[in-house]
Image (tube, rainbow, N blue to C red; front, side):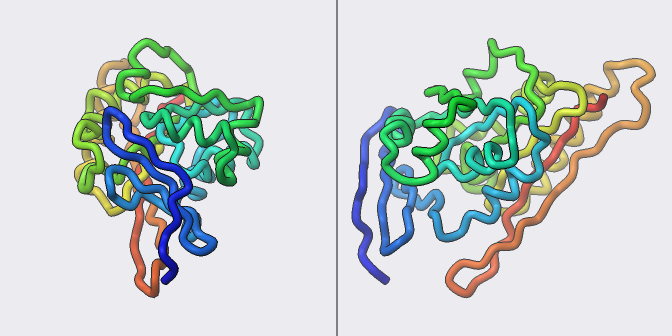
Length: 227
């Protein structure tokens, strides 16, 4: 395996972020932990493909594959909220594809913020909210991201969806607890509305991927705001 070449690195209040190239593959490293690379992007693309189009909010820029797929599918506008400011700078500088393409598209607005705080005074609505800010509740890169997966914040994202809009959460492994939490959020919302009909349920989408001869099951969790 070739040795990695650092393309860019920076320290942030939440730790180090770096882009590396290993052969023909670009890697994103956060706090010394492998976050993603350009060799296997099936789950990032699946996240975009599961979203209704229109106005879409994406939490977590990554290497730009999810946002780029939304644009390719015809999204009207994409808001991307990213915690690591240097990653946004590297995107605007066109350091690697597809980061540069996402930053240059007039349908995209990049926001430097923690989405858990940013969402508080943004009413929406969005047709879809896609959360890929960490690896999921079972393996956090940033401990403070645990709140992204709790009922309070998930309910806030659902409330900012347009009727029929969809919340999607990416996880690096199956999370039955997250599915249960989303079901509880939907049930609580349905219970607060008279004549709402059957209680909606969240669902799990498994995305199998192969890395170095091994199979991994990534998971997407989907919650729809009723019409």
